[in-house]
Length: 121
Image (tube, rainbow, N blue to C red; front, side, top):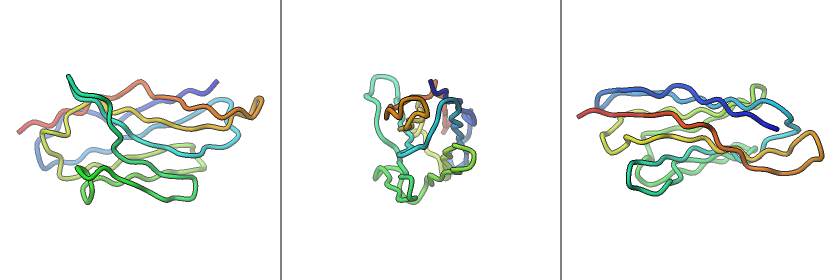
């Protein structure tokens, strides 16, 4: 089993910044893709950004040039630096990690518990 612990959400004024973290622990052989999703009330969960094990990144158009995803492979942690935040960025943010488990070498995707980000106007 693998556990994901998210941190860094909160309340911020428009134009401000927040940094989210998601640390994976447990039966991990290696980690492939790491990503951040978000879900606002009444909306479907959407992909915000992702990063491969090689460091290739992709971003949703709505966050390009404002958000930066990064990872620390030694710590099994993924980060999301969010700058120039807008009220429309308000949502619960979830990390998603694709793990090759140390036990059995199965590939599984895990979700974090979610962290609330609220941007006031």
